[in-house]
Image (cartoon, rainbow over all chains, first blue to last red; front, side, top):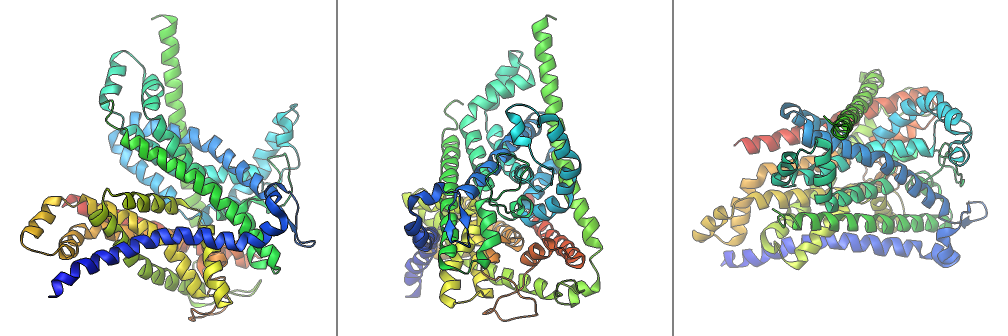
Length: 310
Length: 280
């Protein structure tokens, strides 16, 4: 009887492929760890906080790309989170209904544009604009201030950590906006209406009622955006200049882990060089995995906690 | 009205205007990106773009080999990823549902969904390229497939979960074995949604660059050999845009326009097919 065999067979097949997803993840961990081993053996744990990156003398440390990664991601969050919040505020609370769908679609298109397009646009359009207008202005207005000034020192060359952060902000905005919009929309109408009924203004309803109620979900949205910003490769590679220098100035070129990988991996002839690059990738993987996992957990918690107040 | 009320109202209008301005600014940026892309790209669109191969530095040529390579690798990748993704999604939605193992798989899948694609490139380099001894089209295909799988898993599970249990029960009541309930009833009801997921996965991988950099690499010549390095649009765009040659940069813009047009059209088609489903 064939049909008796069909069920266990089909179930087994689907189970196998579901396990394949787990296998991919464990495979990534094993392969990266194995590839990074020679570098980690040679340099020890100090690999992470050494700033030398010299293919000629075969000495490598992750500090410069790691700092660049964190720096660009931080700039992206500083710009992206307020904008994402502003857009979610506009879309959920104010936008007329007929306009909601078109704007939501436009935001999703923004998310669908491949990162290489942001890169080429940043390099050819935004970088010259930065060099001509934005950076000279920043240098002349903020550059002479006592402490902040060192962040805006140096010549305006367009390609810089600041520009990379800005492009990243633009790239993660759609994700932050759409997740925030979802968690805002999940706030029970009763809460909103009560606040309005007490005479709260629109801003007060969002800031004092909607945001506190959905704070776990909002934190999840922010972390998901951060996870993407940390690992984004192509858009950053185009506009950051791949310079292994530790500079305080945001207007100086720098590098990130992913940009270093994209620029140097195929050129790395030496075994230790390749291994050090894989070790960089391993550091990036642990970092993004941690951030994404926490973000995801928060979002799950937010959606599970729904209804406790309703 | 007292001063406090006036201040609150003023603050409210300020924030309202600010959020409006933020939305407008972001939409303006999207418009600016698409506009410069169209403006610069359209000048590179001519028959030679589709007929000639990528030129040596400074020469004239087209992107024929890269277009072909991208098309072939994307199609093969989705041919591998779609069955894997649909099956895994089926397990989550039909067999495991709220079990612990399903929660784990779902969680890992969601993390993989936003994991940096360059890591996938490194992984495939370590597994495929090192053991083959050279860069190859197949390595590129596998890297793209790994990126596409989580997208398909996610949408398949979501779409199958939308199929009402009454349909499954009706099928079971007629004595249909479970696997046939899933394939004949579940898949049929969720077909359009699953198709949307597959289209979105195609859109996602057709613009991916990072995982191809050290798997498929690039190839200056026309090649259909998947065991050799293979030209593809994203890597060619990257290489040409970063070069100092004007001809290469023009080709990069042309390629960028092609990729974006393909990705956006796929997205819109996917959305329309999802909408058709809802209207039914």
